[in-house]
Length: 462
Image (tube, rainbow, N blue to C red):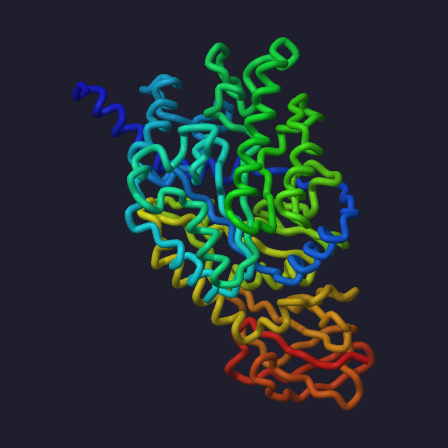
């Protein structure tokens, strides 16, 4: 390769480190469905209720995009909001991106470390990215060679990464989920080289080439089937890429896929994101929290930094911000899945571990007010959020202290009045606090060590 070409690749790499923050807040954010259809299968309903009890999970984005530390997949898509190095042609950039597969060699890959960190954090379910939009598989697919098992990591006994990840998390008692991208920008059945690519959608006219789209339908079915039939128990099939849908002229035959999925994994939750109907068993607002309570299953998916995957210089959220977000989400009836990206070497980096451990420390004290709770009709009063035990005999008042908030010597809220003669206690320690009620206003005196903290109280209700 010439010196000039070396310089071009270096420029691409340097610019790519600047991409995540600019891309992470733009066009790849999915809208939320406006309707919800409750599943009719009793096994799905049972698993859905169990999933709702868990409240907190992790979404692990990992792939060849971790090598240069850039936003997952999107830089190879041609849309107005995406910026690339202009010294490279589009085809040259795509070849550079695909070439990261020959550099992705995570020799420190340790899924047990991932699972142990997330367990300490208080997470109870996981979703692992088996394939993002770029088509690179994190498992040994029989239907493509574009996978971790056929490139730089192919000689490693851990090359079938998905198996080791799922086994590690199952050993820690996690509910397991598999993320799968419906679009596949590497597949000739989706982005056919005969035509130029124009945005995120299929790049050829399906009506003119129905046989090719039929091949893509079968390819998608086959890949999902091998994930659900060859890797043990899977509880969640989390499907991304909502533009691949009948309404957009890209019907992948979800009834056929769903029938197979539940034959392989009875009761599995299917999350066909943004496509409301029988195959969106819970909704997934991205990077946001709904404004009010929702009376159906949902999960906010929010990354720990600004980015889903690993980047070199992330802007981290504080552990307090994550805790406060979790509290709000649970009070509104939802779950939080927190995005964490392992490093190119295959570890959860120390800066992430420190934040996750801090979150776990809070949940080890106050998790009773989070896990296996249900929403209350009066769920919010200022910086106080409310949940209840499933039998509705106990109410939890959870104070979210702002990151730069003033200390509070007492808390006051309306409604959710403790029963006469009951004690108001700090969750975890059981310490009784002094309280009084004046009509529908409750005031609780707060000890000095909690006045600048987020914490939870519990009491019996009237």
